[in-house]
Image (cartoon, rainbow, N blue to C red):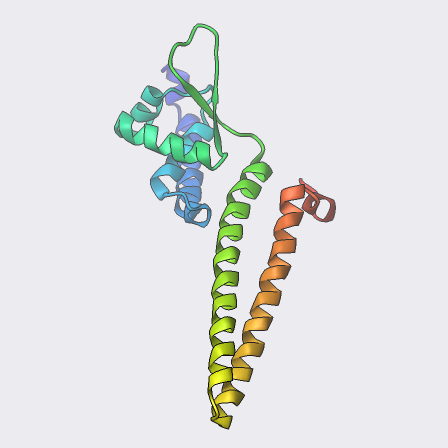
Length: 181
């Protein structure tokens, strides 16, 4: 490192980057990404060049195995991609510049999974309520069953609406409503 890069300005730049990386790392749980992998993502994000696992390991003072696991997680989330560079035999990784695509990829999968689970649970509960309704002669119980049935139908309607929202993301039509900046 040359003398110029030891100056207060370079130290301030490193501090600013570190603060931003720490903040995004703490919030990566929204994406289902661990804080450690969030720091890895931030490190790759600010790297001037694509990084090898060795580069990552050195930058974060963590094992190469941890870096490999982290890169795999970030790659599966669509946040990091493997790139090729002539003359380099090791795998290189860089962040995907399209943050919108990463967001859509991560959230659509998580939302779809949660919605499907919740819709199935509501449908199962409705089925149980129907059987219970048919078997009982207790009028106050049938009133309660009817209330629960209406609640579950509202839930199913909500999950159907969320399906439509997810479809907006999957098709990219969301960007017609809320343009990328």
